[in-house]
Image (cartoon, rainbow, N blue to C red; front, side, top):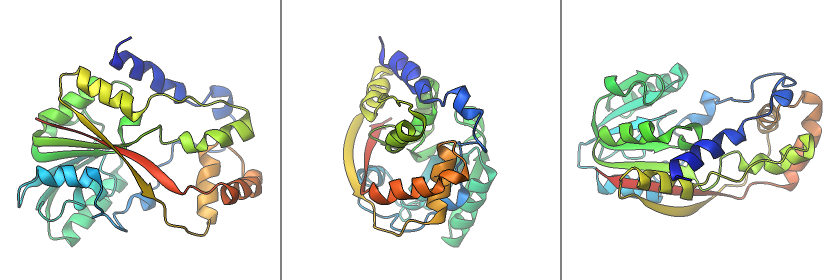
Length: 256
């Protein structure tokens, strides 16, 4: 089986079974804009930021695909002076635009799904794409479009394992549902390499600062698990006893 075929067949197995979705009070596929604002330490010395900085000239431009609020792009300011954000949620692009203006940058935004909007998106010095790959079953056109829009380098950040893996024990607890293991960041590397790019993968761990569990944390977890609010006490107890201490991420990058 090819790397592309393995990825395209493994990823859909993360879909939530219809019989569970039909019981969900609201859609579990939530991306609250408030969770994507570029606050905190966006200038941390992660491999993703360092690899992008290596290829970014002073006053250069960054294209951030799946930009959210722009953490990847704004983490490269300076030296970047022009940023382009692509996202399928207008609310994310509104935050991106606001944050660019606050920082005194020139900015352009493109609303839509990548690579569908690639033809109307400008080429930039460096292309970043953070935490998007696991949403893309057909990686080949996605990756080729990333590459064709970079003058120097493409830098992708993704979890080492599927971003919903942390919820797998809870799916088993509440629904007796076993979740998959594949695909992984290593599988993403195999795909990009198979497409002819000399790609590199660097794995790293980020500590998660301790914080008090909030009602919002419980609510978002409940929604993602397709549960009703009467399960909140159980969810809270589980999260309190099984806090996430670290994130295991990876940087996948290649020059063009």
